[in-house]
Image (cartoon, rainbow, N blue to C red):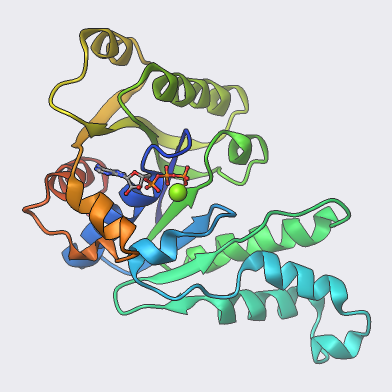
Amino acid sequence: MTFTLAVAGKGGTGKTSIAAMLITWLARERRGSILAIDADPASNLHLALGLPLPMTVGQIREDLGKQNSPDGLNGMTRVDYLDHKVRMSIEEGVAMDLLVMGRPEGAGCYCAVNHLLRQIVDRVGQAYAYVVIDNEAGMEHLSRRTTRDVDLLLLATDPTMRGLKTAEAMIHLARDLDIRVGTAAVVVNRVHGCVSPSMQSALAALPVDVAGYIPEDERVGELDGAGLPLAALDGNSPAYAAVAGLARSYIPA
Ligand SMILES: Nc1ncnc2c1ncn2[C@@H]1O[C@H](COP(=O)(O)OP(=O)(O)OP(=O)(O)O)[C@@H](O)[C@H]1O
Ligand SMILES: [Mg+2]
């Protein structure tokens, strides 16, 4: 059985950093195969993982749109062609594989292909023990239903009311849309010292747990600034140690 976890939340709250640290932790624990999915059109998870940027699912869709003749598909059906292309696009790292979604469907791109691609990505994920999805900022992926059927939805926020309101709105939207989420939990990132009393009461009033508090950690910023993978972090990094702690509690072995 695949355990799927997704990181979502307001822009710049640390979704990509948290996803990369979770993936690093899973890889170190050697719990099973890992597929990282970069579902942000800005596609930068590969940098945090130290992998090259592979061809994106968006590019595959655009290429298909340009193929007018059936010969372009090498005699394959559309489904087989897309399935083959998506599997070929996966970047195989030592510790994890990476699939990059790229730009979402634009105007004029017909739904049937997107539906097919979604099914293919789901099927590809089923071959892994863990699938970790780094989402784009905001709630669009929930309304598009590209985030669904996740075992764990981590809502990243910084210690600000605006971040927390976005996380809260996402909890309600996921419920209203009846999106299947096993567990949803908030992760407060970039905490300097303690969170304010008003933030504490707002967190306590949430209908979900707070999975963890991740301290501000200058090493994270330094590595990110240099475009280096977060795998350089170890237990001495307060941020990595906090992510490892929440992973131990929320991700089954
Ligand atoms: N715990 C932390 N300590 C210090 N810096 C952090 C921490 N978490 C994230 N950052 C920094 O905050 C910035 C935003 O982080 P990141 O890119 O992970 O956020 P994001 O939510 O994925 O952003 P976006 O919405 O643009 O995708 C980066 O410069 C990153 O290095
Ligand atoms: Mg990001």
